[in-house]
Each structure stands twice: as structure tokens, then as C-alpha cells.
Image 1 (cartoon, rainbow, N blue to C red):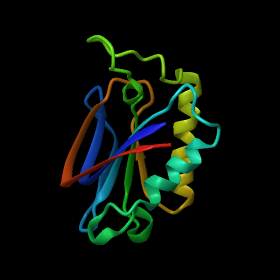
Image 2: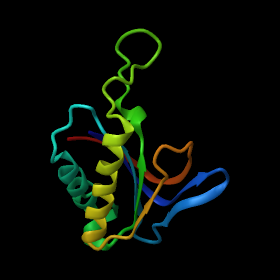
Image 3: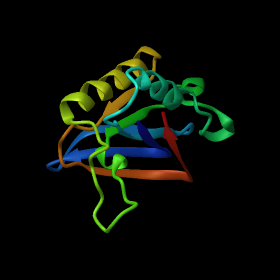
Image 4: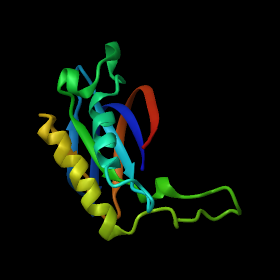
Length: 144
């Protein structure tokens, strides 16, 4: 499993021109989490990913989303699993199929909400327009 976590002042996801998920980080900031689920991920890797999203100290003042109650926008991003070592065309064989990945993303979202965080989501499997205002910019790659 991989995620790109970006500190944002705001972020939104649109599907067919309609906003389906949106956060406003306000003064503390928020996190845009693009999450890719792998075919060979450990069954409990979603727990580690949810913990990292909530607890990594990537907001101002070395704070985490859990520390300051920052909002999180979670967007499924199977293309993070693309292999690009050979040729010019990415291979998606490492990405989990939708029927496996969708419940994993749902578990991450549920875990973050159980931690008391405001969580918005993209729409699984949809063609999404993701908009963000990066703060810093500050972006990290997380692998579990």
C-alpha cells in the first residue's frame, strides 16, 4: 500500500462537475491522502496506513491531524501502484482489483473517523478531478 500525503489549506474532489468531497484546513491545515492499495498488501496494512495518515507530524509546528483535529480528504488512487521500471507504459499488475481495494479504502476512512477526524472522500472507481492548495508545499510518500 502506498499513499501520497500532502499538507493542504483546502482540497476538493469533483465527479462530473459535482463536488463529492471537500475539506477546508483553515489555520491548522488539512491532509490530502491519495491512497493506492496493492495486490500483495498484508491484511492489516490498512491499519498502519490509517495510523500514519492520522499521526504523521506533517502539519505546521510538527503537529499531526490527530493533534489538531485537522480534516482529511481520502482519494483512492490505484495509479500509485503503477510499475514504471520497464518501457514507457506503466504496468498496473501490482494494484489490487477494485473489489479488494474498495473495502480497504473504506476501512481507512472508517478508522480515521473513529479517531474523531473529519474525513471527506472521493468516489471509488470514478473519474475524479482532484483540486488542492498545497501548503509549504509539504508532501510525503508513505509505504506500508
